[in-house]
Image (spheres, one colour):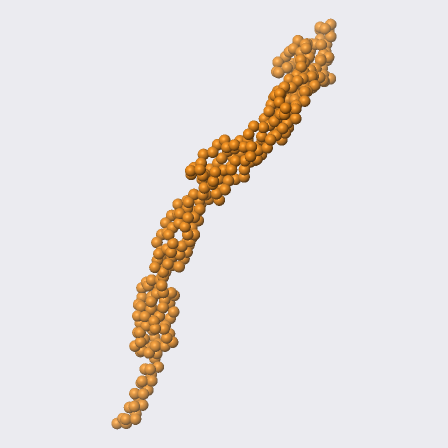
Length: 349
């Protein structure tokens, strides 16, 4: 028969064994909160998991009771971040983002020539909404272009009232007697300013000098300015070396300095030559002399191969060198064959 003392001792041991099976502090779950949160729990005590603001639960249980075994049941609860809706497209700009999940940010940027009218960024809030509305990319405008001194606008069409949009252009021209230094076209830039203005400067040229054996004509004015012109000519038997008309340039110099070159008197009395691809008699075609710059080809004999070849001669300011290979026949040596009538030598190619 069991004694009362033995029964009391056995029940005490049972109570101690049961009381010792407490549940430990529950596992941490990412982005979750446990209420109440303690170091240990007695059997029968309950805890509740809930997701932090900005996160929503997916799967698994939320409420658990500490069992007699002291081991919490497996928890499969997941707290996932809220997802904000698609932010939309930013016209004339771009929305930059990595993800639309809480608590990420998105930023806004405009294309060149546009500026942000509104916020530069927005955050996905705890409620799954964007903290700011989508901004607007408004076009950049430039004020009416300033006109340089001694210049005028030749082409300009404002796009927005009196203002201009990005990449619009304006074109200047200088007033008479002035030369332009820089680009005549300016552009409305991305930051609302115009590109660099040109400069118009008054330019004078010295009076052109008369060439030897020639003449020059120019406007009868006290001074000659940018774009003024002068014309040159030569006396008989002289040839103008250079353009007939010259112009006063932006650096205060004439575009050219023509001169008059003398014609050549020919020491050869009789010869058949090539001139501009045709055979001509020298004494007939150039009876008044050869003008400066004109070129002919003399025929020469190759006695070994019994054939002919040509060498060039050109009149340069009154001087012409006759090729040494050319032999002029006397009119009495009628039996000799002229080099121009001998068959051409074959080329070595």
